[in-house]
Length: 71
Image (cartoon, rainbow, N blue to C red; front, side):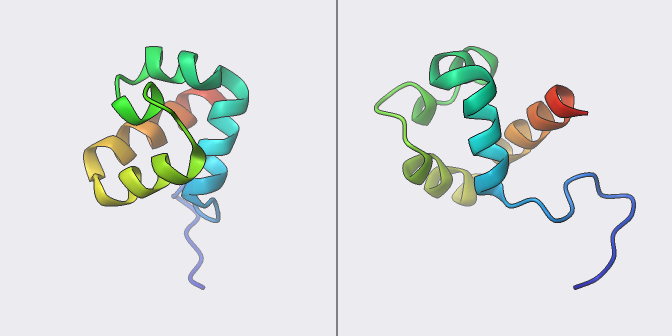
């Protein structure tokens, strides 16, 4: 594993990022912050991860919200 001192997300999995955001905002709050349907229509960690792994723009928004929230 390569050291990445300038990457604030280094060592965090997408699942951990999403789980912490859901704990902080809840699904409704997360949808209010980022208008992504997987957060509004029968949301789950599993289905959201599947979508975020395939959709880079959505993943970028989730990662940016994580940094804004927990930095």
